[in-house]
Length: 289
Length: 321
Image (cartoon, rainbow over all chains, first blue to last red; front, side):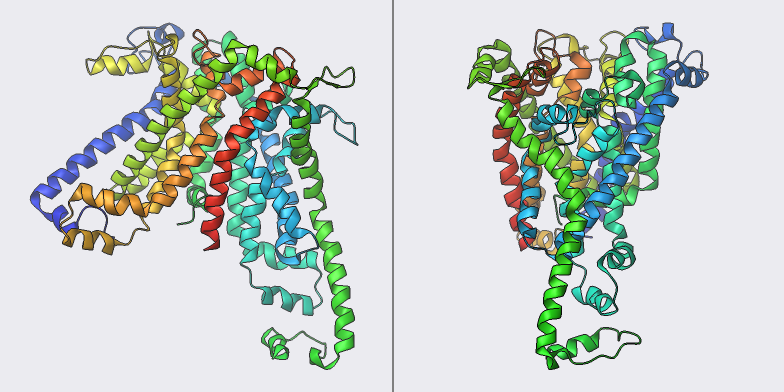
């Protein structure tokens, strides 16, 4: 593909020299900026606490302490916090799909009375920055209207607000809008009910958008900090991010660093496995090429 | 010829197919029945979303506005206090500090977070080797939980055994005090936030750069345009839309900065990193003054509504094209 630099210039001797110089510089900067910190965190965790406070720091651990991983797992009680985070993230994911997919389908294909008004009201919430709703939503979940339930310390405090996601509705509806009406008409003539059509015809062809919405939901739940910080005052219920930050002051640095590395592994694996979906989802919402 | 249309669809099995046009009366009633049915199904499918939006989005928006003018302690019924909450905020010297700090964060974050990813994307678009590596590497920090990033960088910034000063020292530069000095703390936070988030902006720019038709560069070249002229007259105009969208998104996101100052500095040193959201958090959860915290949320909402409104307009008009 033709880009900014012309191919003829690139093929010349001087062009090649410039290209490889730029390449080497960019590579070096990338290694330094994005790969080296990871190396630093992993090796830092395996240094002895006394070595960690040395100035200037050592490039390689003088003594390797691989036992730090197990020790960190035990002392930081990571099993509990991993469990909590997985429970919160999976629940947020499933409830977002269960709530938003049918809603987007109804708005896209069934076009009920007032459907456009409802959609407009949902999309209008995109104008409201999430942090401006922190306090009123917090006040709301401590005493839900009508139900009178207090959701503090319950994962439901994460799950249901996460489902009130207008961006999901927008992405899903836009995808459903492109499914040809004739396809669904045929199924109606066949006598299939709408639920069946959604389950049997629409969902199977919507896998790409479901993957995007799923990944966005899980990553957001895993990364979130401020909302779980507010709704989980009980240490036993906290997610990894909230718990690690709370334990920061009473833990030795090497134990803490190991905890930070361990807490990142699931997201790094998710990225390596679903790289294509994640990078595709990146441009799905805001920017169309 | 509408009757032809149904024959295009696969023929329903085991049921006779008659031209619908032939029986107008039946058609009208079945159509009405179907319309009612579709509406019932639609509202059935929408029910959960309506409840969730009502409870966790629409109601809190209204509640937030009401709370701004109330005094609440969760024991007595809320009391109307007019503009008292706002007056209390304006009387707090930290309030102005928080807004100025936040604006400083946003301004520096735009300088760095706008220019660095764009230049990176333009460079990556020219490189023909190790493409996959570059993409994965730049995006990896985006996947890390922000708390992990903040705690890692707090250690990297440690003026003694930290990596930041060690790296500067290795190339012969003097080290800095980073988070320990009120003059550099905010910029240090911006560097962290740029490091953590530039992956997504870079890759969005890269995707936009790849849609630029090569002929544009060729014809510019034939007109005698050099490298920088081509960058200025082809690359930037062709990616203007994406640049605008991300500019607005970044303003909205950076004005809400919380995790970095909360985890890394707690607002210090000397209140130099107290941001709007950090102060809002203090009002609500340290001073238990939910009225003033809501008033602050409302002010933030108004400040950001301009940018998010412009963003929605921009993307909406574009997707209707």
